[in-house]
Image (cartoon, rainbow, N blue to C red):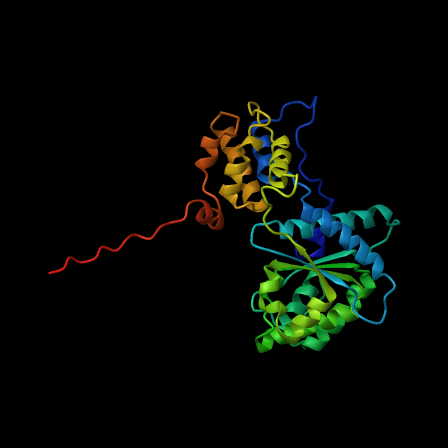
Length: 326
């Protein structure tokens, strides 16, 4: 995904579609493949990010003097941050493709991962790799930066998505240089920048003078766990119902999963990623064992990610027996 060719293939590939009325039944292998990919539900975070990205891209279209306003998608692990980032990137890429004239080879979207222990040079290298800009070990950071800024501007990149931003640590010398490099890039490339990372506001990214500069330019989108209830709505139950409608199981009873909303919320701590994984795994198990429906009994046999399991079934340390008094 971190090269333009790979991202373009992702954007152009139609997402998995749920079974349609009148459609011939799929084979077991087709249904297993479908549930391994599954649909992406439009969550509140995706809706908010899509709306704000569109607005900021228009807002910054003719801004020349300072860096354009940016966005930060933050939240705990497995709450859909990367999914939201990629869906907005796909939408932007496809919108450009639909409008583009024949022979238009501009690149509307760049997607870059911050490498672990990022330095200015390794971060610049990741940006170069996305567009296939040749980089040698002898090149200085300034030389790579010049090539990146020139190529991104010439290619017409309008949206830059930077994932795993929490890996950036401005408290270290190399991390501070990487943060400064990124700030410099936002001022030299005429694009809207969107960052995503785990609990960014509580990380080192928002600390000190450099953190204040980022916070002063970026709006936050909280991609936290979904609450069981929000006013008169039940967003988590609505998400479960949307995922259930997408299932391709021959004996599943519609409405049975939303009835398990309290159990599923406790089981996954309201995390979208954990919920989607649980339902996908249960669907695959239901096909493989022939029961073709998801029940609470089946759901409770599936081991989830460590965060979800520790929330639902915390391990209690063994009690230490006190030696008898002698």
